[in-house]
Length: 339
Image (cartoon, rainbow, N blue to C red; front, side, top):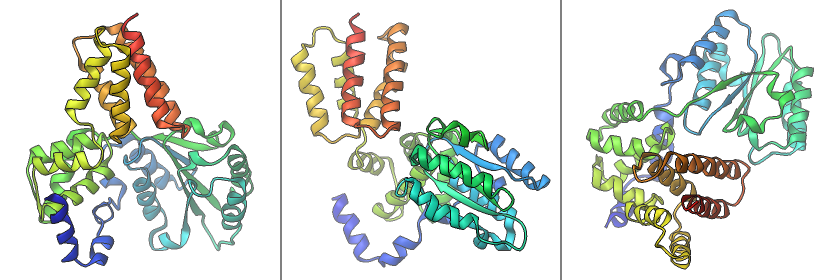
């Protein structure tokens, strides 16, 4: 029913309208003062503006926490009317080798300027190879008079020390659910969308600190619900998007902590999870959260879960196989439970 409604809505709505009116862009903060819940970052950037002493920058933290928004707001206030002419953006995830740095970043850094500096923004900089990062470090040294670079990444640990040490580093934290919910209610009002606080809280909870995901989900919910967002729609869409069903989560949790569940039975449960196409990251996050809040397990077991959770995160950060990492996590916590 929802899919039919979704398709019929698209058939009656100009495609260009849907594509050009992305709510994440329409409601992206344009000023540093509008950025939510990153006070230390905002304060430091405002200090740089006042002193006119601009360092190279390294913004790191989870996706959807305002890294891209912050650097663009900073650039707008730094360059004013010349904002578009003074910034250059490159996504390192698709051009991660040393040649991309030499053929794209180096020529930009060598362009002549009548005065001031230019800003090169490197998205997903943690995808750059070590050789590419080393080449970038040399470019920073050679063009220090005219060029500043802002590296945006999820994991600062993936940036080599010689490059990171030449940048002012700022960590972006996941946004609290309450902050996201209030922003969703504000955007919904501006977009003439009906939504109650319960639905806003549900979308915010699913976003897990990612404002961009929350706003994107709100727009999807509004499109499918024809301007009305309720809890039922939220849950159905969450399932379509690969969210973790509570029944599956509870079954897996019980199988992990129950000694009476045979190994072959546990293996069958794990295989069914793989076949269901549930997002490994979503599942591990939800399961870990359940472990932390459960009264059925010991503090020692929580510690082991935390260790396994960190190992899973390392594999994902290095772009390893998520299914293999999920399997190691599940069997790791199960074995620890019976020791």
